[in-house]
Every structure is written in structure tokens, then in C-alpha cells.
Image (cartoon, rainbow, N blue to C red; front, side, top):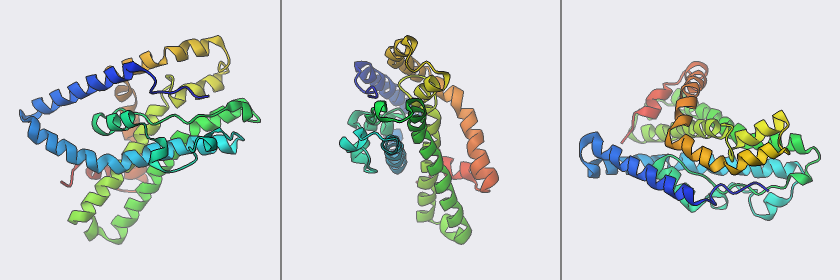
Length: 258
């Protein structure tokens, strides 16, 4: 079974730390927490569809991949579903929505059902991030079609809001892909790396996994994921949306329509 990400009181401490940091940032921005908070709430609500889609499809992909590999466990727990309700951990969802760091309910799987355990675990581990990438590209194509068919709609009030939300979906899915590929337990990247390098059943795997939550919290507190993956993800986004689709993606993403 996959270990639960949220069964640790340290996560609550991390959420408190991030909340305090966010409040301080708002206070410093213009000296008015109230004005900053209103703008922040609007931006957060616009990001809500991206979070629901990104997390739901990510966890569904894990569940469906494990089911296709012969494991009935995800279906038994009702996880072969695109419904956000099946995948959202309340605290993890609120934390992600308002603080930028969060988690869904990990999909329970049993790799003993796989015909080839090593290959099955790699497939299941990569299913979520591959799905996030596919969503980012697919939604980018939808934006491209909208801009080509009706450029006047794209710059209208409603159109600008819609394109902003769609681009947030693209960017959020790329962020989820990049974050989950980090080889730190309990993220997907660690299990994939362990299987590729062949130490999934070694004692060192469990020794590292038991310390995974501490390592992950340290990564987030010191913003190492941002420092490590932000530049590569920006280049990837620029290649997909700028070079391949010829879209002003940075404008859609950075310029709020509100």
C-alpha cells in the first residue's frame, strides 16, 4: 500500500508556517492586509478550477493505471473517479488553495497484483505526472483555438477571465508535474527512481522513506523545489505555449483580469 502523505502532525506545523509567511508578505506589500487579502482571495478563487482539475486527474491517473495493471484496490476504495470529492484531503486542499502547498489523498494500491511489479510501479508512479503534462498541453491547444477563432473575445472582459483561468490550469498542471517528479518520498519521483535503480525492495528504501516527511518539509520551508524546478518549467512553458503554439502565455498567466 502507498503510505499516506497527510498522517503527520508536522504537516500542520508547516501549514501554520506558510500561513504566517503569506500574511507577512501581504502586510509588507502595501501596508494594508485588508486590500491585499481581497486581491489574494480573488486570485485564489480564479485558481480554484486549476487545483481541482490538476489534483483530481493526477490521483485518478494513479488509480486507473494501477487498475489496468491488475490491481482492484483503487476501485474498491472508490478512487477510479474524476470526482474531486474522491481525491481531496480537506486540509491539503485548503493549504494548496491558499498557501500554494498541499496534497490530495494518496491512492491506495497493492503492487502484488501486478504481473510485473517493477514495471507496474513505474507506470503507476508516472501516470499522474504524465496526465498533468497532457492536460497542460491540451488546455493550451484550447486557448490557441479560442485566440485564433475569436481574438476579439480573447480581449473582452469575460474572455480575458476565461483565458486567465485556462492558463492557470496549464501552469498549475506543469507545477504539479514538476513537484511530483522530485525524488523525495513520498512523492512519485522517489518511487519511480527506486524502481528504475532497483532499490525498491532494499532496506535503504524504507530508511529513506521513513525520513521522507522531514526531508519534504525542509524542501518546502527553504523553497528548494521552486529554486530547482522553476527555471526548467518556465523554459518548458515557453517552448510549449510560446514556440509551438505562438501564444502570449506569460501575459495570460501574469496579468490578472480582475
